[in-house]
Image (tube, rainbow, N blue to C red; front, side):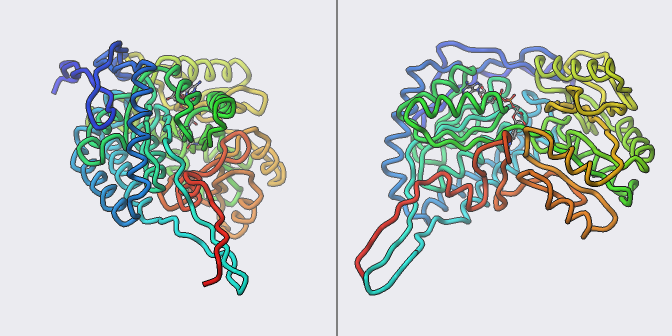
Length: 478
Ligand code: NAD
């Protein structure tokens, strides 16, 4: 099929109270592989947000009383409906986000799997004390209406993981996708309208203003947010100033991978490469800087260059494409700016180093050496297909440098002696630390950041508990 001839999408709708709701205003959605608009998304008004909050509040009153087993069945029905629309959702994702179609299919499957995994947890009451004087029991009460605010890198799975935790815990949700990638999420709202009670899962799209209105809204009890540190701080401030909303913040990272002198370079290079470049580097837990022992930098550099030069970059609909474009123009320009700055400050591009000469926001997979701390590419989160290689001499120094950041999302240690690598891993200040791998998450495993990489943990039982209010009951003896 000629990719340029794909038709414009029909105008998407919000889903409020189980019904499609048209926008009164619209904004363009750009295909990052062509840099051209291909659809429009509705821009929610304040009144539409109020309607969504009202509908969610009504739905919450019934949902909170639904027993866990029944909630589980209903939510599993939603997951099944998502799986049955895998192809439609994946095609929308590739067009709006840019990722290769196979990766988009995996994202849709992971979206359903988030729900299936999270419903396996139940917030059962815990008896803290039981004696002749009575019983003390801790139970978990749902909060009310939860606002889910998501970024553009993996729009479906991230919005859904917030929503699924909220719903399993007995809340209702209003989901707001990024204005860069609204369409697959709006489609998800339509699937929810067919499979969930009305008002339980509402979707509204709009710009950053809409996100701010949600954080200020007195009818919303909690914001589950995934996005950048800068926006996360705004969300926290606004949530505090309104009704002291609860917040979960899953924010950016600058994950270091420490490669020890005894690492099997040829064996680890592909994992390290894809740990950094998956989704064109647009992943919170991507490897964002490599600290490699000086004795093996040449071999590691050569292996990464080979992989960078082999990776097939292109439109996500082209067969065999492994890396799509950067998702949007501001991010494309930012990443190119970081590369330019690094090259002007002593760095040299072992691979890539520039945009591809074609329409769309494509950057050649770039590996840069000769840089160190103090260069923006090393100190900031690049969130794009460029990886700096830094050398170290002593392990002590590598640990200090890995930890010397305001971020603390993930980190990894790669070495031939797994026990020694694990010892070093235990010294890293990050929410997730891997040994001889990097990246990946699962609904059962908590995920989140130290320091400015976030507040709280998502997923797992810990994540689920953060969507509920613990209540202590002092009861008479049995
Ligand atoms: P962003 O912070 O710019 O936007 C995220 C969402 O917040 C969007 O929906 C946006 O419209 C909304 N928003 C913007 N201003 C707002 C405001 N004042 N109040 C409320 N909402 C507002 O982030 P992005 O550029 O879309 O995503 C990239 C960032 O997300 C990266 O830093 C990445 O590391 C991070 N991320 C983190 C995780 C994680 O799990 N820790 C996962 C994926 C992405």
